[in-house]
Amino acid sequence: VNEVPPSQDSDDEADDLYRRASALDPSRPGEAVRRRVLEHAAQLASPPRRWPDSCSRRNFSCRMGPARPCCLTRGHCKRRPLLPQHRPRTQHPCPHRRPQLRHPQRRCPQHRCLRRVRWPRPHRAPHRESGGSTRLMNRRFLRRASRRRACSSRALPSAMPRLSRTPRRQSPRRMHPPRFRA
Amino acid sequence: MTAAGESDETLMARYGRGDAAAFELLYRRHEMRIWRYLERNVRNRATADELMQEVWFAVARDAARYEPSAKFTTWLFTIAHNRMIDSIRTSRRQTSLETLEYEAEDPGPGPLAEAVARDQAGALIRAFETLPGEQREAFLLQIEGDLSVEEIAAITQSSFETTKSRLRYARAKLRDLLKEYA
Image 1 (spheres, chains in turn purple, brown):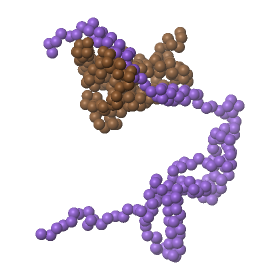
Image 2 (cartoon, chains in turn green, cyan; image 1 turned 45 degrees about the vertical axis):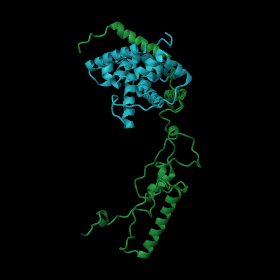
Image 3 (tube, chains in turn green, yellow; image 1 turned 180 degrees about the vertical axis):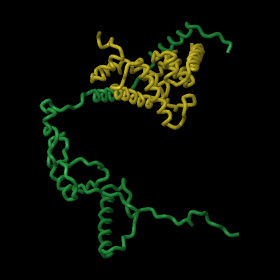
Image 4 (tube, chains in turn green, red; image 1 turned 180 degrees about the horizontal axis):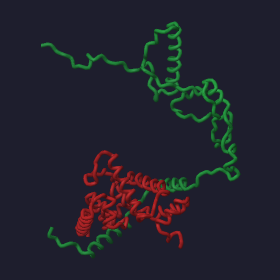
């Protein structure tokens, strides 16, 4: 506490020695780091894509694709108010191109019809009551279950748990430690 | 004014407008300073490389939002400090620089490093690494970043007096070590 505060000269001396030692230190950042950083920066610096000048605001159809007939059909079947759905045309429309999926990991890649794979639910007994025959409903249930199982086991074995392996509830008795009689 | 003579803030503004060459110039100007700051604090080359990349990615990403209200170096070293603290927290080994025990990452120095280590300069670098973490960081921020005591206090979120005493202790210890190695 009672030490005399160091002078400015000695501070400068320490700084100079440090700087000299630093200059001799051979360690440097990796070349790969430099390359990655500069590539990333160049990517971010590239100007955003713009619509060509020939596309004016008034020329709406140039930027927006035509209404899709399938949308109208679907709306018609469900008896909803029909509104034409326009999609931005970013690329040349190709009829053979597979459309982008919203949740690709949740779709079965083996089906080209883009059927959605449902998340497996815990096993339930088929619904018994109501007017339809139980036999028919059982058959439908089994058909759906086998389809789901096929999709989940073939396509996404690691991502999705199997239907048949739904953990069962353990009885509360097993949770208690065993009792010993004296 | 040539590109090399331009201020950091001007270069950042240029990069914000999409000039990738300005970023490269900035990177080359501050590369070694940031590298030394990171490497001498974390004392692990791989971690320092990783942090270096993260820091410069952040600079590139936030360039559009950068406002030259403060010095560029203050902003840059603030990012570096925050990334380093995050990295230390993520590693979940220690939560503060003071208690950080570094991995023994000395697989055997190369011929050049050995030559440097024999030198007084190399010895000084090794001695410097024995400083307590907070003192070492404050000293590095001042000497590598050319930052004032107020700026260091703001970056490390400590008071002016605390920062000043850390710097004083760091220099005093360095002088003692220099006497030993002289």
